[in-house]
Length: 470
Ligand SMILES: *Cc1c(COP(=O)(O)O)cnc(C)c1O
Image (tube, rainbow, N blue to C red; front, side, top):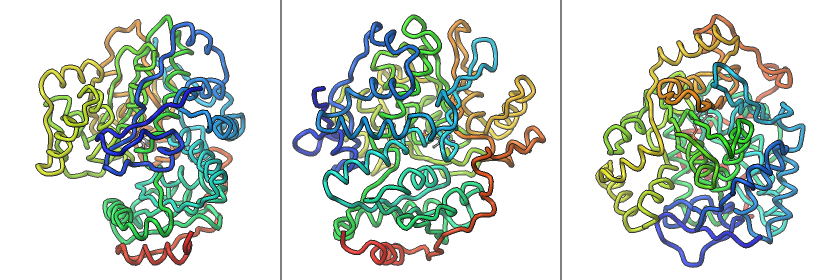
């Protein structure tokens, strides 16, 4: 296995880094995102050989070219731990369920926290553990969450001996299921901080603490949000798994993805770049429709965030779009930096018409309002008996609105279990979806949470007292 080197989209830094380097670093020091220097390619024969393989075998083959030799054993052990039967509560890990003629739902909610983020974060936790044990290091992870990322990250790190994790959530502003999934974890290295403020306040505290170099070095700070390349790499796998099940390499698949930070749909694009036959990627956005507006106009301009039924996509800056933009500039950091600098200083950037046309050839973006979200949940239940969550509904609505050639299979991603968002599902169908059995008792367990003021200093002091110098 040759080493795959990684570079920053903004062209900074000196020597290219390895997979384990970018795993630990998260964001590049120049503010850019890490990408592999080249795209590995799977031939039709490689794909055919993967048909029918277990998820863990597919993950091993698909992710291998992104790793470096010295990390192969660590990866093998982490992949076994994550994707061998047991941790995901479905024997197929990412099962396809048919909902219409040549239309499918890819259920990505069988992991421990019932959202697709488990597929990458469970692996990330195991990889961190391996890499840190080997280096004899400890790290501190801090993150802000509006719901799903927090519980998935805590669940991934709760058993990591060398990781202490602090998750900030806006007090009283996450759903009860989401909050309890975080706060009922009883582990000495997990700290839930309920902040008096909004999600944006939590995010801003995290950014302030990352900007404090002395603190960052003192506690060895790291991040687990979706700018981490390892998360993207792990998400590429289920696109291959679905495409292979539906006839790749002989037949192409169309995917519809509910989108916020552009991590998940970018992983689909990467799968296509690596040789998976894809016939179009459909982006579903809720009323926070910055991406849909970009594909309409060629201008990326944030608006204010409005709360919706699909809160995990209530976001106005899609960080991972920078990775795609980098490709569209033919990997030219100078052009990319010019766009990013416009975004920072003028509050928006616009791409030239040829670049917009190329982006429109890869993606179709569709916005989905609140009524359409509820209507999609209701209609899916009426036609199939299946309950889908509001995020899944946004993606499915978009996929059906941009259906195209009906001989191409359409796969809509189910990114969260309906029981995570019971109010919206009940409003649409009259049925309150029950939590899976393994979460029985979630509402009875004690909660571990510290209520803190909306001030970076207070949070910093709390963290230093719990970690000391590490
Ligand atoms: C995180 C999340 C999304 C958005 O995914 P991105 O990778 O940020 O585009 C959509 N739906 C659910 C349920 C999520 O948890």
